[in-house]
Image 1 (cartoon, rainbow, N blue to C red):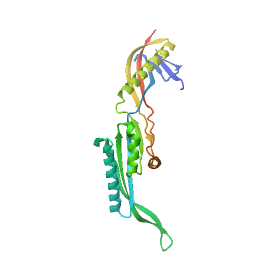
Image 2 (cartoon, rainbow, N blue to C red):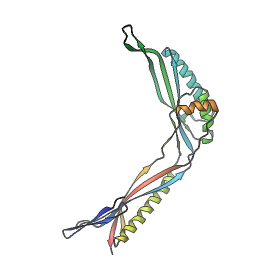
Image 3 (cartoon, rainbow, N blue to C red):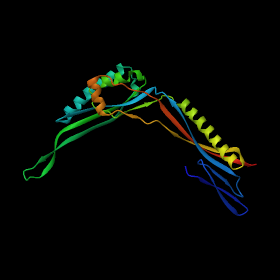
Image 4 (cartoon, rainbow, N blue to C red):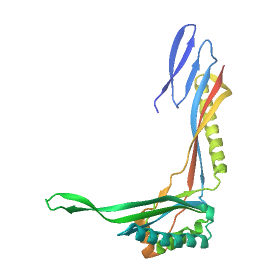
Length: 244
């Protein structure tokens, strides 16, 4: 990280001194000397739940047949999810669409034009699986009953507050330690904390694409590695500076 200038203004004079570490030390005739610092902290937590996208896509020559086929398959999927212990509140329709399918055909004059050759119905569910031990079996059974498309799996935590608090404590401790080091290097000492703010970073979802869905149908329940989620917090602090 590039050195940031430390600006000290007194008696109409301006001085700039370099300090490393993403901090700034400032003083003016009207304002007390302060030091601003940022630091990170993180904590890990093993996921205990997953949010899964499951979709049934049906195609037919007419909308009525496509709708009937799709509805029949989706009803079986929802019933199976409930049988597997998924609560009704954890099953939510995420997307539903009916669209024509086109094909390029050659006209009598030699030109090409788009022609409707059928219809496609897509019905997608967002499903929360709160017992990860059941996740592979739930996916396998859903595919067997008609699920043929899926968006992704987000492995998460039902209550990440303990990990977030641990990350906050680490970030604050790192910020205070960094501020003390910089202040000592400048020949001053750290005073009261004047302001503090934070930004958080949440884990990203793991993708589980349609090809994986089709593989699950052929090979049985896919293995799911839970791993760990990392929760990161960045704190920004401003502290008063006491002259030695």
